Length: 588
Image (cartoon, rainbow, N blue to C red; front, side):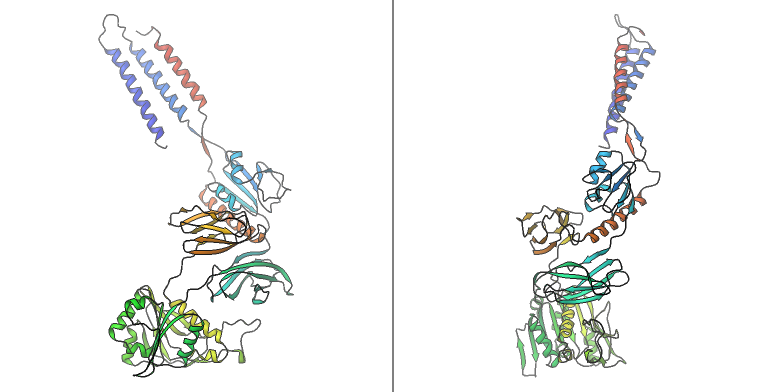
C-alpha cells in the first residue's frame, strides 16, 4: 500500500506526457487543406490545464496530511475518586459515583472519541482487557491509594511428590505481622514472621499426588486472624530414579543409604563386593553403554572406582557426557595413585588442615527458637580434604560453609565427589527426615534430566472472566469440573511456542490436557484477591506510562489526511473548463 501513491503519480505523469506530445505534434506538423494548426499559446494553455487536472486528481486520491491538536481523554478505573473535567470516560471497574460517560472497555472509548493522542488514567490502573488498547498513546497515570492486604502470592507450580516447596508472598500494610500455612485438615504446617518489606516465605512438602487446597492465614501482632486465602497445590507423581550402586565393600553408610532408596521407591540395582570370592548383587547391570544409558545415577564408593578397569572408567565418563549422573563416595584418604584416578573424574584432591567433625546446616522448622542442646543435629565425620574442579558447585555444605561434596558438569551430565562419611548418624539420632532430604537433594541435582516440560500459564492466580494465556503443545484442551472440555486453538509465537487464550467461567480446578499429560490449575473467584489484582494493574499501568513517556516527545502531535472533497470539486471544475476550452475556435 505504501507504493500505491508513487504508482498513481507515475501513471498520471505518463498520461500527461503522452497528451502533451500529441498537442505539440499537432502544432508543428505541416498544414494540409482543411487542417487548423493550433497556435503556441493554445497548446501551452491546454498542457497547463491538463497538468492542473492531473495534480488535482492525485490530491483527491491522496490528500495532504495535516497536524491535529493533541486531545486528552481522562479514563477512570477502579478506585478513582476524582471529578471529571473535559473529555472523560469511566470503565466498568469505576464506581457509580463517577459522573462520566460509561464505556465497556478502552477500545470502545477510543473509537467513540476519535482523535485521542493522550490518556490520563485515574485510579488503580488498566486491567489486562484494556492495556493492549493503550499501546502507542502518550499516557499519564494518576494512581489512587495503594491497596492494603495480600498483594503478591506465588504458589508452587506442579511440585513432584516428595519434594519440598515454598510459598512466597507479600502484604501491604502494618496490620499483618505473621503468616501461617495450614494443611487441608487445618493443621499448621509452617509459620513465619512478615519482614519490614511485607514479605514472607513458608515451607511445606508435597505428599501424595493429587490436588489439594491449603490455607494461608495472615495474623496481627495479637495473633488474631486478619485474612485467610486459598493456596491451591497440584502435586504430580514423581518418576522413580533409576540408580545403580557399586561398592568395594559394605558399611553402615551404604546400609542406611540403600534402605532409604528402597523406602523412597527408587529403582535400585546394587553390586557389593563382600570379599574377593563373594559379591552381593541385586538387579545389577554391566558398565556397558546400553546399561549405563538405562539408569539416571551411578553411585560408586572409592574402592569400586579404584578397582574398575580402564575401559570401564572410559565407559562411565562417556555415559556422563551423555547425561548420566555419577557420584563417588570417599571412605578413606586417597594416596598419590588414587588421586590420579580421581583426577580422571576432573577433581584435584589434596590433604587439608581441617577438623574431622562437622555439623550440617539445620533446616528443620523450629517455631520460635533455633535448635539448641539435644535438639541439635549430631556431629558427623568428614575426610580432611581440599577438593577443587573446573566450574565446580557445592553439592553439600557444613554449617560453617565448608563444602562436603562438589559436582561439576561433564558434557550433558554431572560428576560429583562426596567426602562426608557417616550421614547414617542422622537416622540414629532421630533426624531421619534430614538424612532423607540430604540424599534426595543430592540425587536430584545429579540425576539425568528427563522431566517433562511444564506448560506456562499466565497470569498467576487467574480469576474467572479474565483471559488466560496457555503455552504448551499444539494440541491442547481444558476440562473444568462444571463444563464440557474446551479445545484451544494455539498459535505459534516468534519463539516457536504454541500459545492459546482461554476464558474460564467457573472457579475451581481445571485440567489442561496435552500430549505430555494432564496439568491441573486453579481458577479463583473474580473478587477473591482484589488487593493483589489492584496491585498488579497498578504496577503494569505504571510501567506502561513509563514506556509511553520515554517513547513520546512533549511536542508530538497527531496527523491525519485532509478531506478529499475540496480537491475533488476543483478537479471536476478543471475538467469542465478543459472540455469547454478544447471546443473553442480561438487560438488556431
